[in-house]
Length: 134
Image (cartoon, rainbow, N blue to C red; front, side, top):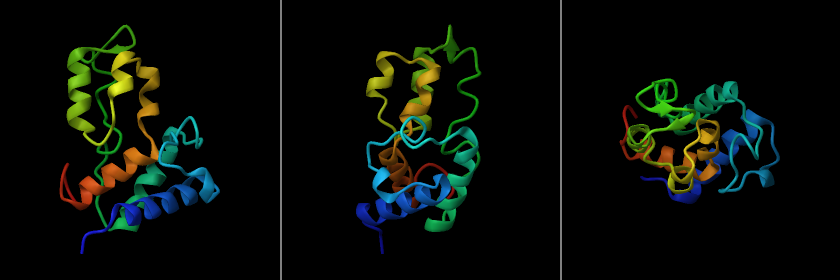
């Protein structure tokens, strides 16, 4: 039986609370993992592991946080994603809302794309069999 969006949100929130040592009320759908919840790059490994355990899914390296885009000169020039880079990010992160990021595609702002809601949508895609192994 498919999980409801609320059930996915609750499990994602639980994984984030454990991984980042947060209070449950800190985890809102709009909360940015890095800016609001204090996640650092190493925390994304723990978050990925906890999501795999909570949902019994496999998340290959580079699936949640796309690798190779930010250090490829065809995708990044002068610290900003090129049109080609933005197109690649859209393909690799269909679960993220890039609307605001496209206005100023500064690579330093890429982590702001990772909100609780983005993670919920990512997991929903995995559970539905989208975007790689599940």
